[in-house]
Image (cartoon, rainbow, N blue to C red):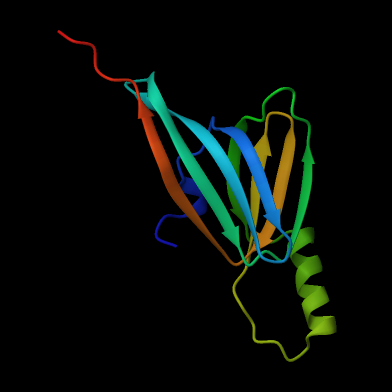
Length: 133
């Protein structure tokens, strides 16, 4: 993970779609404003992929959009502890892997995911062309 999840440029992004492959991955398609000198000059389209998901909780109301207000990783949480207890109970000899609690807070709810990795893919840069002089 080259860029820390907490520092990804996603704040203010609108969630277009959410795709879940249970036990495998979760993909969020986001449209994020591109700012220049405090002005919106376009939009980035991103795929945020959380891979090797082990648990998740979704609590959102799309009214009519979901705007991402903040995102962070948590080192400790009840959801992360629940996953670790379940793994110790059902897979006591499992190799210990690094996992994280990825929290995304929207204007109308939140999404919490326990996963091992993430990637951010730029799908398109929908910038406004410069005005002719």
